[in-house]
Image (cartoon, rainbow, N blue to C red; front, side, top):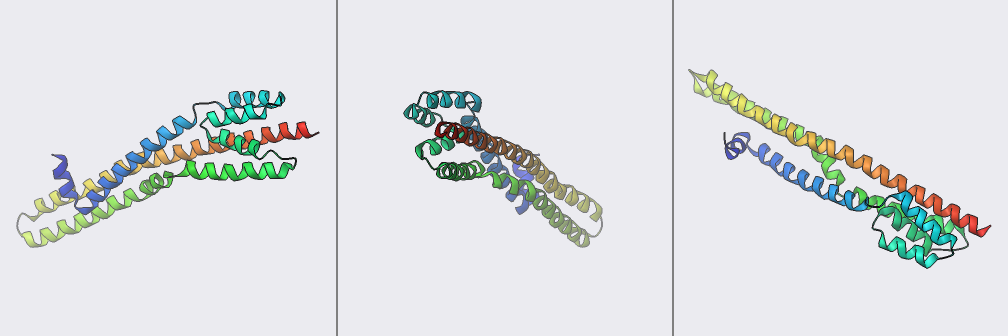
Length: 205
């Protein structure tokens, strides 16, 4: 059976699921590429270089390093260094604000995958219900030989449920993976902020 025939059998629900599928794939690819770019540099190596620069009183060098590294935790450290101030609370607040900004950026579009994962199954079931209703309507008007009509109709309707599951399962898996990756990024940002504060407090003593 051709793809176009399957779409026609499923009705409008199948077209909705097709749209969900394309959107989900686009989001998954976009976020995977984004996370890969943002995780090229390891936090431990980065912080070692930043601390080394700060121990040499080379704040400009540390700032330059942060600007070259395209990761969320580098931007958090940069916010702290650019707000370098005797008042430790001001530096801490600057880094906390940057963590909030970076977290929002990391979470961008991930809700789409979660929404598709939670609704695609129901869209598929709705298509199936409509298909079964149509099949029973056909049997009521077909008279003799109507059982073949309803069997064909139900088999076509169940295709919507299968399609819904095929769309929902990858979306849910991707969403859970994204949440884990974002939590990892947040942990790295918080650790970097804490380490920078330790260095600054040590220098002010």
